Image (cartoon, rainbow, N blue to C red):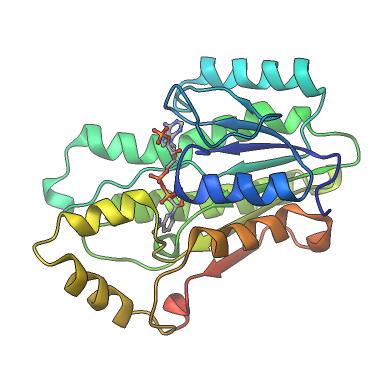
Length: 244
Ligand SMILES: NC(=O)c1ccc[n+]([C@@H]2O[C@H](COP(=O)([O-])OP(=O)(O)OC[C@H]3O[C@@H](n4cnc5c(N)ncnc54)[C@H](OP(=O)(O)O)[C@@H]3O)[C@@H](O)[C@H]2O)c1
């Protein structure tokens, strides 16, 4: 088992990609500390610890780190998967929405890194950030989300360099469009959901959307010792979208 005896924090564990990452990590033997905003988590395993809260709030992040220190002593792997997309034309976006996107995708990641890096053991550890293909290319109506995910990539690269001597690796998985509840709900809001989905699939070289499990496979690789010499890297898992 690739994560045997390791302790891992997974953020955004209450939905989509975070749920798939948690399930892969459980299978690989990790002890799991999970977090999300909703109060209850039906999908948690019997040995998992779920602590709900808002990662935009530094007091909560500090208390989560305290809880991890008390229950596990150290944390080997942190998956920064939580995130939020607010779409719409730049000129129509309210300042509060822009702040929310930057906080929920970028500044909250900074807070988790700040409070969890000190909990990593002397031998080192691994952060895996879930970014987006839209952190690498621009798209109309997604400008603030792109800016936040692009910022997340640079946050990861900078931290990778800053912490390299402590053997703390920091990498990014950059998913393409992935079938998660939030994406399925956005399709359902379209007048013809099936036609819209086909249109989106046609824009992807592999001609289909990703599954959450395919993204979790890449996260698991970057979290595990199999990627021990990889740090500061961005791994697109997008069916070729950013290659085209
Ligand atoms: N799905 C895609 O097509 C796609 C593509 C590229 C990148 N991504 C990225 O992949 C990640 C997961 O996406 P997903 O589709 O699985 O999203 P999702 O189903 O909307 O899940 C997002 C998760 O993040 C949590 N969360 C959001 N804001 C938070 C905050 N301020 N504090 C704590 N938790 C917070 C949510 O908690 P609650 O639900 O409990 O509120 C939920 O667990 C995100 O970073 C997203 O940007 C997704």
